Length: 92
Image (cartoon, one colour):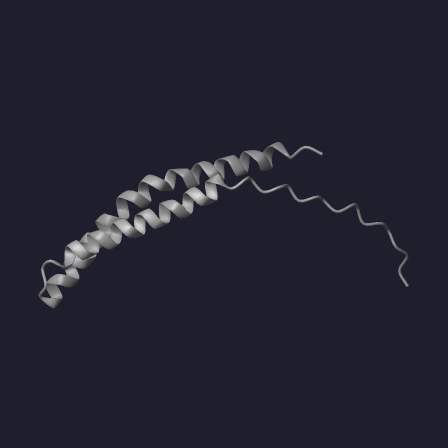
């Protein structure tokens, strides 16, 4: 039995939304790491800590992007077989 067109469209839209997260993960992670570690660096007194945050943000962005690539490259899940209609059983 072929897949339901609505289910197939939902999977396609979901995968498209996941693909749109790639640029966000690559852009936001280093920026967030930079500013968060810059703030921590001013509190601690080590101004160069922002570069550590930038590197950690890049590493986190690459890790998240690889995770998204792994999900997108996996084959789409098979549709679950619907159970047959329940037969009317006499109540005891």
